Image (cartoon, rainbow, N blue to C red; front, side, top):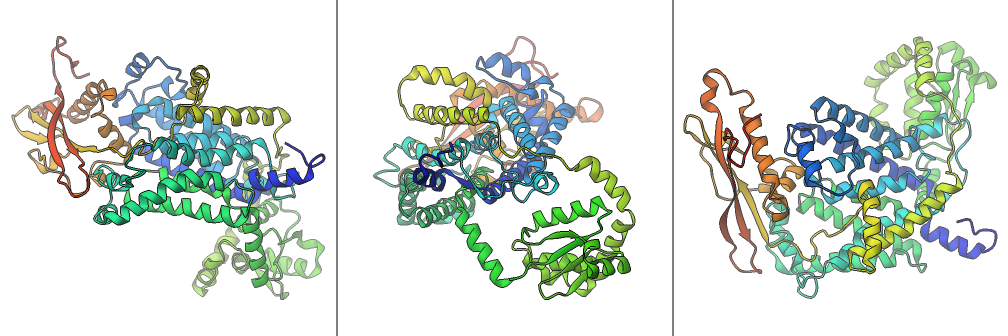
Length: 612
């Protein structure tokens, strides 16, 4: 996409519209890697329930029931230790991505393993999972590690000097982020969105999602109508205006803030899991380079002269440490030089066995104080300087520095193996840019099909590839309108001694059928809420048997011998308390629906298998 030679004016406009600043890509990389890392940590909490053969979806049932394409390394083993090992690898890769260490490898491996995890259990997925996969896909083609990264600190060859980056992948990422909203608006075709504008009222009436603030706001119908108007028109017109060449900078900045404000509202009012966080990280790609330039000018005004950093030329570890601090404290103007080349710095270094930092006023700092001066000049962490310069921290800070200095040989050998200086290819070969160009077109076609665009033959042809890669996106959040059938799951059970219990909350004694005070915060995280909510849906009816087996295994695992046998779970029913949300001003109705009856120790002739 290099048009600068033949059409310079067109190339400039394309760079403004479809280019991404390398500093913005670094922010996006850190945000996406951090969200991915936190999400993987949460997966450990439900490891046995969702991702192993002992959980709610054994591999045998998944493979037999799903004829579609499904590539998943997580299907290679069903034991907890195997899934834990994969999640550990994924967590390390997510940290590598956030820090920009072997960034390209971390992006590719994170994408492959995340798609693999999603293919393991589709019953617990939410929109945020697919969005993570789509964002990781485009990040594989982009130089996200060219700024503020470990890669930039240890590279033999410097990163690209120009901040602006334009490629098919940058266009693909920007279009991907806005596709979430534009195609979602097209799918929101119910009257509840336009012209009634009651959609937010219905969304905030869903007990499985609503939070206290959302419940409070839902008391004011004019406000919920205004919010419905805001969400729908922003999602429809925002993606079109954000790529407009007219008033690009102010318009794009305002729209980015409007989309972010919408997701902050979601966070405060609805339990949507990690979806708002993923969306906020995706929207950072619209932070234009002019924002970074403005922040840099402001920082230069406050700190006209950057501090100079001096290290021992015989210490490779010292140089790497200085370069890492330069990257992550965001001090590109601070030069790094050997102390031996400057008489003053050399004298101070040899007399105090310390690195040296000299500020713009020619004051020299050593050891811990030298670090605090760099923090003071950091545009990102400068607010920490008043805390770090406290006299109480100087002595322990110097002690840490002295310890590292005494063992710098060992640290040097370790960093030489973990962080070797290497040559990095910041840009991909031409072939991969061609692949990105093809995927830009195919992704737009795929999203067009989700809103009914013909021909259907191309949708069928794309489905195996897109589904295998888990970029088979469908942005139908609250579309065509928010659900009006809500409810909560109650599972009354009977123990071997005849006691009646609530299987989901055995501590409360006998089953209780009234609505929980705050259901969205009562029964686990977003994956449990999603899974149990889907048990009510007809398309997930065959999942009820396996959830029943899982409940039996979980309860009876330690109650098969001795006196504990009387506390064995013998049978239970899955009852869905179906609540229909009426129009504003009317009273909702509630009815019981028995979804499933389960015998934990059934004979082979019954519908349920014996306890394994």
